[in-house]
Image 1: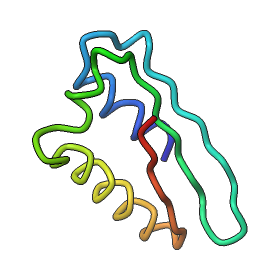
Image 2: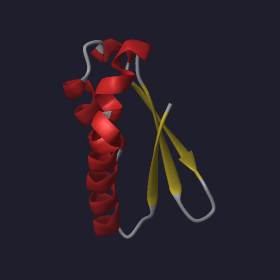
Image 3: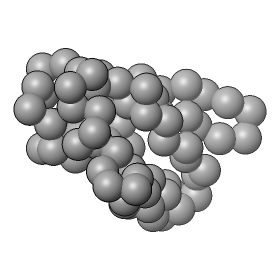
Image 4: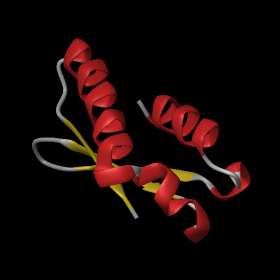
Length: 75
């Protein structure tokens, strides 16, 4: 899952070297934290949050295949 988020994020931003993805285990779910360069924040979020929503949808679909619950946070 982390690799998927990292791959998508690096493809969208101007500063792929500043992309970092962390995994935080919770009791009932897994939280994936995505950090990008401040100049790239708009590209990851998109107009009205459409890109961020699409990233979350793709990750949720991949997680459902594995029977897990994943939350993507963009920092």
